[in-house]
Image (cartoon, rainbow, N blue to C red; front, side, top):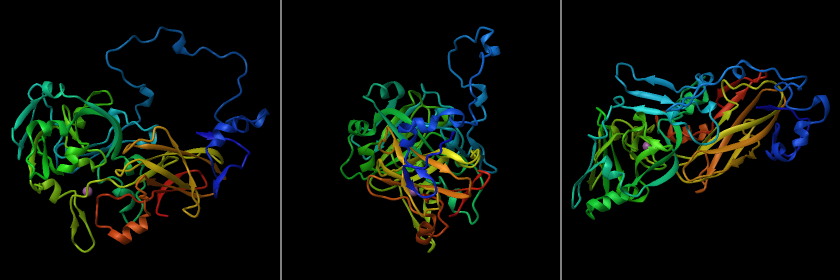
Length: 428
Ligand code: CO
């Protein structure tokens, strides 16, 4: 959204960054007086009678059983990619640059499948909990829904997210969603796993669980018992309705803040174990290869991260003027405590406004006002979470970890804005 204002005040950092209250308390400045005024360029002065559009001349469509969005929004799509030679394996990414607020529509939640989406009959599906337990039990879907449920708003992020934004020698020119869209945020509702583990009676020697999916890859991950007993959930609902098949219908494990792959979809089995199982999905994949040839394993929490979604590639500026910068921040470490924005390539930083609600391990929306003077600029954001963790620069990550690793990249994203207002991925 572009605004026009002649006021350069409320400056919070160099190159035109302004406190967002300029939008709220200086409405007069925005609306202006007289002809030079308001939001000009996009809004014309009202003159004469308003004509009646065609859709006012006929009765509208009737009610429907399940809603659909306006056809004019059909261009807002997940960007998909499949691994060559495989069936159903691959990922699709949330078009972050087309969304606002913090909730991802279920239809646009990112996907990552290792052998496609199974079509599971909920009447046939069972969850087995066994291993180091007193009473192995099967749970069918009816019995699961009789346990007390909780609802929580959390992001889920694939640990491979953002790799293409910063770990390629030359910056990849794609949209914000293609570069960072393996993160989404929903309200999840389900049964705390600790309740079910209490039902089966966990052996005191148990230190881990194995969670296994019901897809044809039997995708499975080991999870520490401490996490399973803390805030793990058997999720049944997403954004108020049953999970979508691409998000694990009829049930998935949900582990707040952990790398997405561990929130095993189409969950069919939890085995209580003493040690991690070392499945193919946590040895050949989802390990972090370092420059010295060793790998980090079981790196679970997702790091603090942020990205400016507007402006961003494809959402170009319309010319010099006052804009609202908007973006998202999140951390597996807890709440976002601060987001800073720079419009001069990181030389100066101003604190952005965090839009309520600011929730634990959820996407957090930040906003800032920017008076763009029309000159080329580099804009970027960095997030800080309640543990004090600060989103690092790309350079510092590569200095510490090299460029061979493929997971947990959380470097600061810089967008270069050229004199035409076009935004590109840039390594600043
Ligand atoms: Co990891």
